[in-house]
Length: 508
Image 1 (cartoon, rainbow, N blue to C red):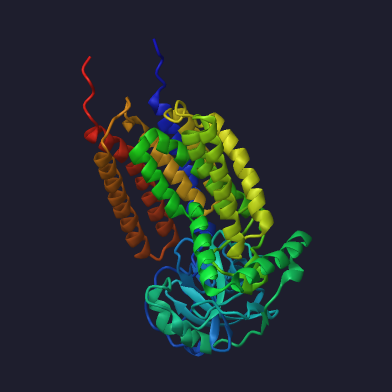
Image 2 (image 1 turned 60 degrees about the horizontal axis):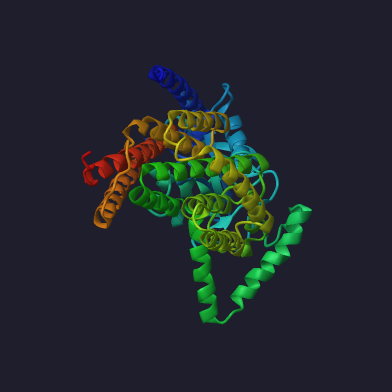
């Protein structure tokens, strides 16, 4: 007789883990609110007309100005812009909070000059930097100048980028607190000016390895840009194609295709490998704090990226994903097929690495290290994530616990989403088909279409709900719920669809 495990053990473990994760996420540090959440009445900017400090004050923010531009931060959780600021901790004065948050989010040491305004439960201060602000001379496509901020404490975890920009160029819905838009220019005008130093090259601040790599990257990009127009167009198109396997949306489409054609078990192998690759790369980035090439030389930027650079997450993910597909479709087949597939795998992975260097978002060492780490992770996945083990709850319980602990300790939004995905997979394992299912080509296509439509609806709904809020914990929770439902739909939804559309089981 086979002894069944008590399901309540799993429920208890996951309940405790969920409390641990979301308890940490609701702490002020992760909330990362840059101002108080409620925005209401218009108050004069004259200090003499300011009311007494509210007793329920919860947040403070800094206005930092140079000319007709001001410092703004692009947030990871809300994916919108705001001025630097956050929650008041440990009963600190509001001015101390504004000073601390400016340092943590932008890396700038500031003096708080004066109180500009109370915005319900937030205090808005005029601040002046103690040293000149290092600003990239080259503006981006939106005429924003990047501020050298990769050394800031919350860079990459809460803050994507720091800009020096005009508040007048903000697009609709781009600023986190829409009610503040009419005051931003007034606040900026009432703030004393901070000094700025524009730079084109900070390579002297890099380590020796990066200093040696930067001329190689510059030469590579210069060679590509010097090609005839037709050849340059082909090169840029090739780099775009090679870069796709590291993009999350492309990996998602691959997972849907595998679920539709090979079934949910094969899909689970790919999902588990992708989760581990993303978890490892984001954790290493958060620990090592290695800058990207275009942070040091802005002219190298040909593509978008944020956070730290080592290792290359795109390259690591591509190595693991293509490697898992090679193991499934080539490695166990004929020797010639295995060799041809391995050659194709090498081309794709090296192409991915080359594309990241071409875009100026990674050093060569970032990509080579990512390939090595990806190979080691692939070997581990090949041994642990087999078609037999991936159906069991034990391995997914382990992945869920691992991602949950990572989310609670690092408090990175990416780790919260990985925990939500792992939990969604774990809770939907009972829906997996018990037998091999046979479908026609048309029905495979129908399964893929239904999966994409359902996933699109979940993603759109969670995005709309998250964009409607300005409260960081709520935004993070809504996005995590969306990731959870997406995983639930991919596993349970694909299983149900395949069973409904499968050919009848032959009678004995």
